[in-house]
Length: 277
Image (cartoon, rainbow, N blue to C red):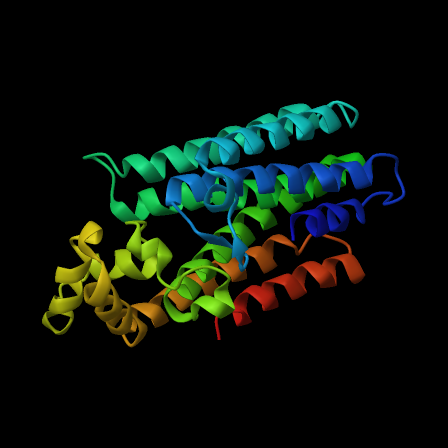
């Protein structure tokens, strides 16, 4: 997806410009590096339906290979537009910051939902907006176009992560390419979980009790929590919030010239909206 976004960003300039393909490669190298690191921290056994790097070769190899991919991305960025390295550095910094904030959780002065949106903006939206803007820059698109694509990418990235939260709860392991409820099992609270924890309805008391001890969600308790979430109102509320973000993404596209590239970006909003149904 990230290389595709880079190439779509380039369509708003000259897509035949030297370095556009390398820019797309950079976006995927940074993305793949982040997955290597994420899987170590999440103790994930699967990634996209295959054995994760850490499960196959160990945590040390996964971390070092992720670092190597980031180094290769920096080497390629050095041959691109002068703004490529600062953009990549900012995206990488946001990825790390988001992961660290997810690990530490909200501080005593921060609401859980505010913390959640800050985390997913850094962990997911940053790389999507970076990919779009890098492609536009490398293709010589006007600065305001790059800024517009960046705003679109921020909204789309947040919506995409929310859809992942839904899929973690609803999709069987074989369809999702990782264990069902993996985020829930390792104590990573997605949006439906946070909405459930903030709710005070007596009808959802059992669900709140289960979710209040995320590290105890093993075996039957994990299965029960998933079942309760799947048929709760929090799933529909999560879909509504995702829809608001997708509306923001569509609105951000308004200043762009009509044509196939813009239509493709609009179609991506449709894809995110329907991938959870």
